Image 1 (spheres, rainbow, N blue to C red):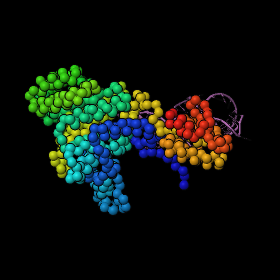
Image 2: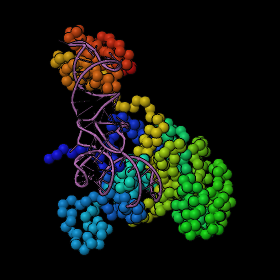
Image 3: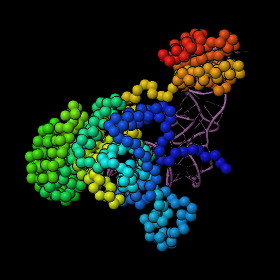
Image 4: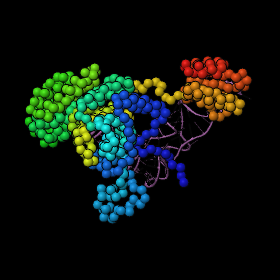
Length: 457
RNA sequence: GUGGUUGUAGCUCAGCUGGUUAGAGCGCUGGUUUGUGGAUCCAGAGGUCGCCGGUUCGAACCCGGUCUUCCACCCCA
């Protein structure tokens, strides 16, 4: 049998010690923030029944689901005519489970299954990997983490406020300063389509308008025309596209523009209230940008829509979310509304990496390495190791007796700042030679003094 | 899913229009120093040139397929 080169599935990655230290820095910041705001953590299985997942993300979403082949004789129910009918006929017979595609649908399933034990409003957060059979590229992976926080069972706009506050807190802690939280409201989009005379077509409208930044107004007009929007309605859109003022001015303009649309005005009012709550909380509107053309998740969002973009980097949005009226309807539980959002850790990592703003040393570091020359030193070291750890000092004993050079090199590579050297002299006198690898200085002191020095450095 | 791109030592990359035993820097191992790391110097190990097939007297180089990487579209965190 030949030796094969190991490899990873497309779009997946290993994380080494440095990467994990950095990822944990991001994850800990997010977790701490969620908890500070009163969210409780849950987890759900990596795999769900395929029936739970399919049909929730549209046709394209279904294609991106990873399916899990049934165990045992997975082909036993497949008939010859099934094979001739194509893969869509065969799939349900060979796979009944799939990997989760996001955290929202499993959460909806969880809420429905535990409705009797949950007291509403329910604030939960969930930090787990999700899988998508997408084609990978920069900032896009087949396995990545989402950090969701959702509040279900209340219509209060305080939830929207808290989402803004949590985003601001996390970004502040991470040291990301140049970013925009784009906010909009589904009802405003609905209102716009009504006012321009294309009622009910906000979905199509937004798919086209969403590309404004990328392809420009000219191309957007072409696309709208292609989608059979009338020239009249397209021209009515013009003033919206060129809106470039502060939030208040934009809102005032739209109040006038949407005066004939009850839904549109409702959307404006909601957004105004969220901003008002922000001021009452004592926070500024800094980083909060009302973006009339922001459109996402239109199949389920019904109120506020959020998206966070870090400026001057090549990564797409790092966070997004919104309000939905009927999270659990597909699972037979009506009337559960909610609002939630998600941080993309992997993209936050890429953004911080690109900006070069990771703090210097959040690598998990040992404080001191105990080195020795022979079995006697090794045994003496073992006693000292116990004392150091009891004192809460992260320490390790070099596991082999051998050349001191090798042991020091190990400490150097692992960036361990202190080394304890135990030879015959130290053992006889019952003390310790402590070397500081950063300064190169070395002193022979008692165990108590050693512990004191290590704690204070 | 569509189109393009990439693959040579652990890492970053050279390698001329196909021509003997495929190179460099960094890293790694050992030595200079048998109780002292980082620097210098010396020596050494390490490659079925992504994989499979084809063209050729001869392929890292040309052709086909496949996998992988990155990019655009689609969509998304």
